[in-house]
Length: 191
Image (tube, rainbow, N blue to C red; front, side, top):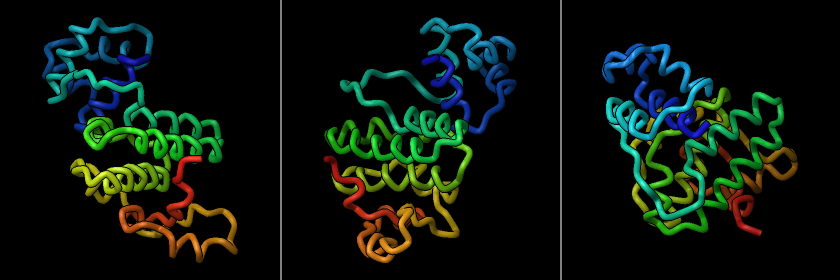
């Protein structure tokens, strides 16, 4: 599944179809479809060839922390299972994971845009949490964080208890608010 998720995410980040990738990489589209569906795995050399055609490359990062794009896949799976509570926990786990990494590793883990999760609120929440953790480390922001597709027009109060929302709004850092998200900074503190 690593090859499938990696390829699908890289392709989505470029907005390419499987056919476009196949043409650029000199392969057949059904082969790409088989790898992305998990029906077949790809050799590392094949995966690298396809990623290069997309303008990506594989690299080693000295961490066991999952990248932002991989956390987004976990959020999507939780949402597909109609488990919004688990989806929020996955985002909080992402925040916690990034908090434990150096600024350089945080940037490396967040440089690839996450794939859409099927709910624009959660796309914005993933971006907001990533932006917050990068800002707190005074690390550079990847370009994808400035995209309008990671910003809500109608803000979302993540706090589910109405009586606590006003305080949560006051305690929301600017790096989170810029994505149309209201979430108290204390909700992202590691316990």
